Figure (tube, rainbow, N blue to C red):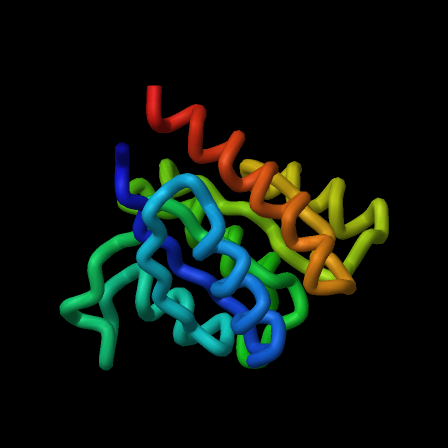
Length: 138
């Protein structure tokens, strides 16, 4: 079974904790790195500054509402660069607006998931995550 290296770009420590705990229940082995703002997320992906030795992730979990660079700006940078454009990006955010959903898909997000508001709702997130990862495990 494939081990997935995931970069989570999220500024809310509570959401990081809930997502990390939920991913421990995934049927896949998941190694998670966290960037707490959009700039650090981009630096991690492009191995700049403090992240010169960072390993590129297999998958990015990306919030929209981030400090320094928004999730949409980060997604545009990922998808406009030949080195990173093939990395799948799952938007994992509190926004359920049609505008954010449509914009994310236009910017080539692989999937859009509204963050669960309760800890037990993360089971649904894990089911979606596992199905998504299963497409790469074949």
